[in-house]
Length: 336
Image (cartoon, rainbow, N blue to C red; front, side, top):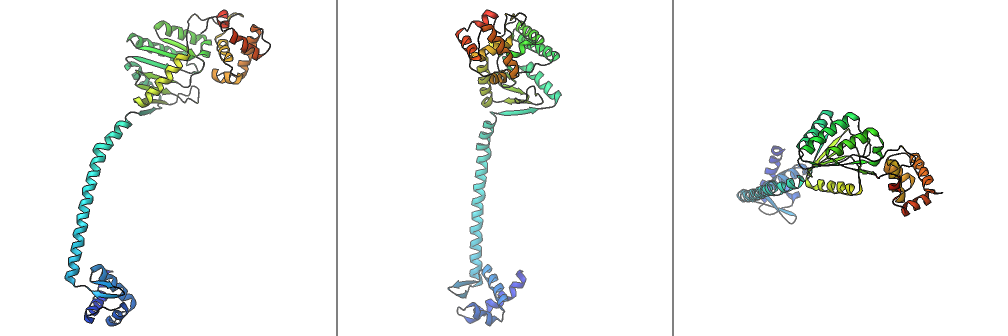
């Protein structure tokens, strides 16, 4: 402690001044009557006070006034450095808060993401988005087909959008049109003025409102997994989703309400027409099954029937004939 060090320090200092000349630590220790431990503690105390200085291996005393002056000079220098540091810190803080932080905030505002999982909040969110859209509503629905009551509610909401002058475009899977109830829903949408197109495969469920807000419903890796709704706002991500939708829209085919159903042996079902297109594109049965969301056996049955109608002895020959005769589907029924 400081008080315990003061006594040996004072004895050491007095012995050093009494000699009048520089002395080694061993000589001072003996002259002051201190043991080595006391002498060490005393020397450290004198150094902190600035009352001694080393000249080579020997010690010299420093006058208390000189030590005090040096201490005050050191304090003022330290205080001045602290003032400069504080001023620099203030300047840095001002720049970070008033210049750089707002810039980052503006950059971050380009992307805003919200999550909804509670059923009532999800329903309210979708109602609000549907009721506030003013110009365009572009949607992709990969399936599976929703219950009839959900389809009816969706049709009523679409009707309200059309009445407000909203351009409504929607994409559905080709395979879904085989379901009669869903065909009626698509026919109703078409009659309301909704632009409906069919596509072989859609990557995920999405709705884009006015090119400003994108709503993703469900887990794209789990068909029909609508437990979570993700809402994205901001140009950085929306533009990419608009590009995805426009690409899908260009590759899809318009839905025709008068498209024939699979009632005659000579007519092609919507599923068979999809198989024809993919088969002509050189896809394997497994690839076609994955794109259509059906089993491999279903694809094989459809390919077998097509081979019989084409008079082909192999799958390869059937694909070749389809490539040579692109009007085959139109001769058996309208394309969907």
